Image (tube, rainbow, N blue to C red; front, side):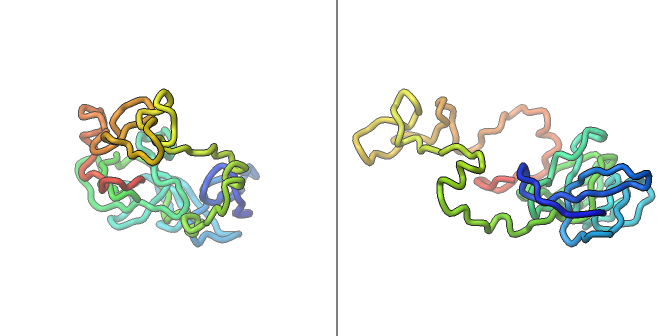
Amino acid sequence: MISIEYDPNRSSDIALIQYQDGERRYILAPESLKVDDRVSSGENVEQRIGNAMKMKFMPIGTVVHNVEITPGKGGQIARGAGVGAIIQAREDNFVHLKLPSGEIRKIREDSMATVGSLSNVDHQNEVIGRAGRKILMGIRPTVRGVAQNPRSHAHGGGEGRSGIGMNPKTYTGSSAVGKTRKPKKYSNKFILKRRPRGKHG
């Protein structure tokens, strides 16, 4: 590995690695990975932080990040700063993966994952400080629904400090409380335990 760098488009750091043939690529930087460390990817690689392999070669209890949902598609789960998923069990051709949100999900054991948790653990403790900085970061202002006109939001209207007066809704009027997941979603069969209500992963 050549260097660890800041990426303005993500919360974790990125690491620049150089292959033996001289080609350079960026990867998500795992926690405790240092410059000049070697990382490998493949089937017969050592169980070490930063190495990527199929989950069927990892022992139970391994902390992983950048996990594929569909083998060959690329990492989709556990890619935020400081997060890591834990391999809890094996069943048929699947592993049971405990995600950062607390959800336990079945993932195919042929899916690739990288060993270790991601860098920049203190990201969640960062205080933005003022609205102007958030705008400079590209995040648009968030206006409460109750402060809007009734034509603009389902919670809008009223005289002064009125509450929402109904169950919470999105601006289009869809329910935003309780179970909002589609009851017949295709991936329901892969979820063994749902995340706690109100917690985002």
